[in-house]
Amino acid sequence: MRITVTAFAKEAQSAGSGLLDGRRQGERIERLQQQWSRLQRWLAPEYVPPDYATSLNSLLEAVVAAETASTYVQSSEDRVAALTTDLAAEQRRLPSKPSLMECAWVEQQAHNLNSARQEVAAFRQVLDESRESLARALASTANLPEVSP
Image (cartoon, rainbow, N blue to C red; front, side, top):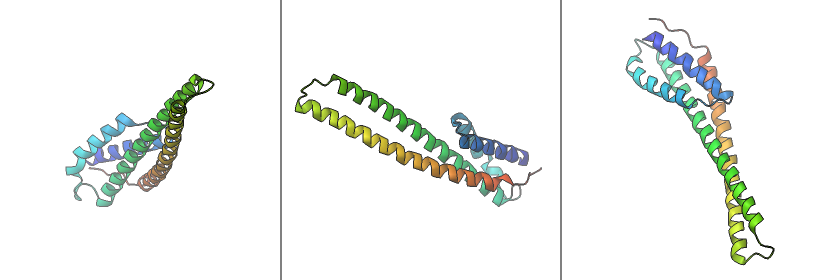
């Protein structure tokens, strides 16, 4: 079982490195979470040193957090792009003398766009923080010893 734990560690480190390089790891992370769940009963101290298991758990948590943050950033950026397109289209459709209602509608869309941009900035900050946490977790697991049966 220790060989499996070592293989899991290497796979989690690889997924984390990929995230730091900007590559999404969605399905891979789902697999890692399932594997980690199955490995739990084998993480008793007689099989795997407690600090090793704790480091792996921290690494997996950091990988999941970074992937989640990356997903939120991408989703919010897509929303900004859609709102930008919609706002531009509405502005082109405005008559030369728009009604109060038409002006209010365009202003509301501009407000929605600004809010979405603020959301992107907040999600990017969360992503940066999660990447920093991931980098620390990767560094702490870089020197884990190979465990053997």
